[in-house]
Image 1 (cartoon, rainbow, N blue to C red):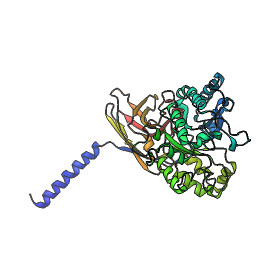
Image 2: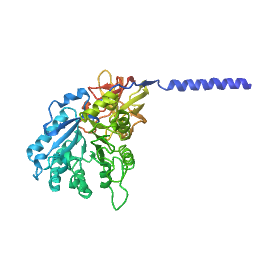
Image 3: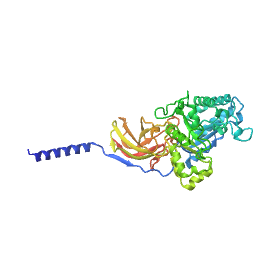
Image 4: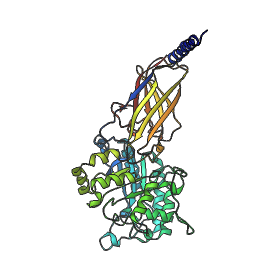
Length: 457
């Protein structure tokens, strides 16, 4: 056989093998997803509604239709500054407040305080109750916090200082005593929830010992449940002055140095707060940059009204509303068009977090196949921590879904399910995380529908 004939023979053989291989591979669905244009009312993020948690209105859930899913729940203890034990009426009212939040599909930022005015009529003369009373009240509240951990987004440290903001008073200025109160709070709040403190320097002092550098949170200890990993940050005078009214430069570091510290920490903890004063620093571009740098998850929806109006006037209000917290946007989903029961369905999803922040609480990641005729649902838990989906990064989620051998044949929709880890909330769609894409969200089930028409044979 001549060389030309041999080459021709091998060319035909390779072509046949390639064709056979191609035919053996099932055809794929490859779906490109369009981003939703508006903010999404996802749990544990966004603009919050300021409320007295002991007198929470029963119709608070109606505000979800306006895009709210987060309550800042004040626990006012002004009347009990001298009482070692809180009365049963207060405890009952707190339980009722959490029940109302749950019924309304809301999560709660919890902060207790003993008022804001001292004998002189303003916050500068305010003094804390006795430390033993504070710690006794925290211990009394602990069982209620534990009962309602699933609807608590986070705690702000509270209890100390006017408004619970940890300034002015003896305890606030004595870091040894402050460390005692924070340790007590950590021991009497659910271990899976973070506690935000008001000042970066305060956290540094909480975790400084023997003259050494302060302990930090990074990828090695994030979400570990250790005290340092459970302490996040809030700023109640965001971009209000050159030091944010004393938020920064309390201990010798510059604002830039403390901001860099916060930026590193809040990739693995959390950040939020409120504005408190109009200032050129909170013009739109700087505000967007700072919210992104500090990985902001939440802000007050009502304060400061002049700053909020400025953001509307300057044109960044909508973007801030969209990007607070994690905003997960699908780019592409891929899966075979058909598969046999008992076999493995290989799926791939690419998404990007276009929000300011990562998720800060644990959350499930599951693929689901839903029969398009009967509605029967098959879920496949993925060994993935979505808190690792950091902002401005593309993330690829690959799943190998081993189908049951007795799975009914038919047409199925492939879905992404991001449920709350609490069994009480798992099937409540208001607590599932919605992907910010067009035509994917099923509000009745809490599923994000990726691909329809996958045939199970």
